[in-house]
Image (cartoon, rainbow, N blue to C red; front, side, top):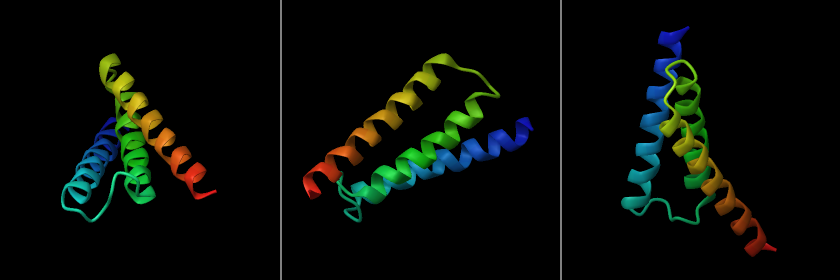
Length: 81
């Protein structure tokens, strides 16, 4: 199962980098829900892998990254109302 967790974690890394690439290239904006959702899903994949290779600072960073993205989604929803 550990190898599967590593593969899932690597997909997460690719997802986070893709989200940043889309932002830097202008395909996404920082207020684009697709950017925030890609960050959330990718970060969850990294977090999943960290439960098999525990690293507390990385777990804290991933959880905070998810919370920042959720706050962004909430702000977008509030502005849309």
